[in-house]
Image 1: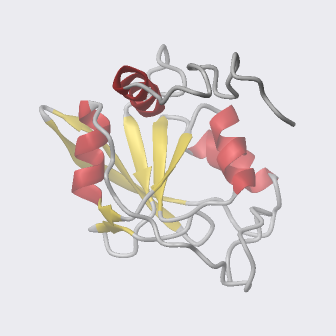
Image 2: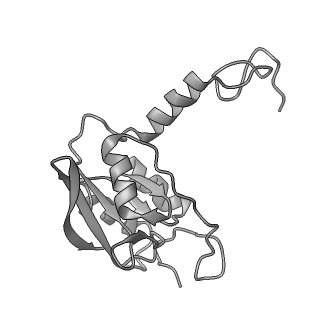
Length: 168
């Protein structure tokens, strides 16, 4: 498929022109916005091994730390179990119900199937690695999360299938 110089696949200018800083700022602002701004979803769930870093794949995590706003910062509310592995797509539907008060989930990696299923339920999956405090600070202040992500290889030896069977 080819495009003429009059249109652009991302609908923000002409092919012969670069993307302006104003457009980039607007796109960044929208990417940080809640999925459903009118909903009251104060919490963020985090896939973590030890409670300091975002360092678990969405399908690997057996529990998630759930954080909420407090004053000018945030606080650990509770640790919640993830739905059981091996139930296919029902895992992600159950996940959406169990975490329906969360605006986002932070994980070091996630497959396309759970990412889409959770987004359809109003929960944004944010793939990143790094300090939980820095990520939560960025989310609760509307800033960009600046954390590199390594390429992930599923424990099954393939890319993430998101089949609800878990990793490994």
